[in-house]
Image: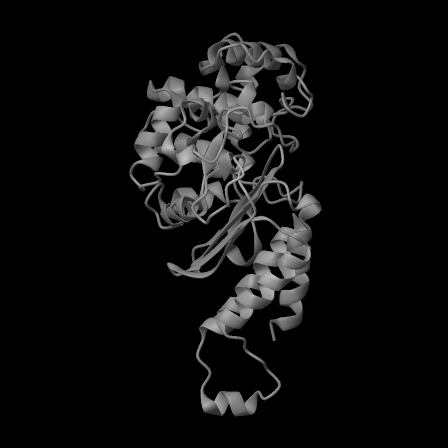
Amino acid sequence: MKQAIALILMLAVLLSATSCSVSPKTEQAEKTTVVKTDAELAATIDNKLADIKYDGVIYLVHNGNVVYQRATGTDANGDPLAINTSMYIGSISKQFCAAAIMILRDQGKLSVDDTIDKYFPEYSKGKDITIKHLLTMRSGIRDTVGEGFAGTLPYTNTEEKNTALIKEWIFGESLLFEPDTAFRYSNSNYILLADIVEQASGQYYNDFLREYIFDPFDMKHTGLITEIPDSPAWAENLIADDDVEEVKIKGVAKGAGDIVSNAPDMVKWMEGLSGGKIVSAETLREMTTDHSPDYGEKYGYGLTQMFSGGAGHLGAISDYSSEEYFNTEQGYCFFCDSNGSDPGGMAWMLLGEFLSEHSG
């Protein structure tokens, strides 16, 4: 996380410098400052990434203009990656689920202060846990993925069957702590939130996202992993038998890590979210508020506070690792996704070092 944040910070600093014109007077007064052109910057970054054999997609937009993009490597079918290649985004998916909850809140169909026994009356601890506790990872509910339960579910089960088994496991386990007394990242929270979206809206979760987010923002290369076996055009670079358990085992990533997207679509999402087109500016502030100052990761509702007033999230699913960042005031949207060539975030560390050295 620290490496990724450092990279984005240095990118913002450097690109802010390169996007401003320098008057002759200023240039004379600051003779020691070297400002690279966008082409020089791109070439240097390309060389750094080539040195570590980084493969994946990197996409940076400033005020609607693409200032850096790169796509190298191959997809699951062996075809070259492109900027518009759709890939798994992992836990970045959580903010879509959080936004769905907030859309329903704005429609008057639920409150973040609702206790979840309203939706899961069979859950004895539900009366002490609110929707907000789920959104902020402060419920104390154990992680079906982190504790290994999700991986035990049969590949042959339907999504409905697995969802029922997941809820049975969650509701039968003890809490890690009393609700709202601590923070613990748990995919289970967002699996339950996706279920609440369906109950409050009366729609299948996938259909809700398409109606209120994907279709209105022309995100034609974005969909859910459960749709991959049907081979829609947006997921043609992915194959259903990829070594991704969350594809093979239906329902285990629902709401928590279930979205497939590409860089241009992710920018549409970030611009819509930060521009008040999906939720209001007030609601976005609520989503990006640090609700766990005791934890230190500045976690909100499926979003983490990042440097300089920006926000974003990391994603990881199987060999795929992704990062997004948007900054409303500065006009930046950044997205990257690697399908296995960047273990440990080495690309971010090297880029951070480079930008630190060349940011003036």
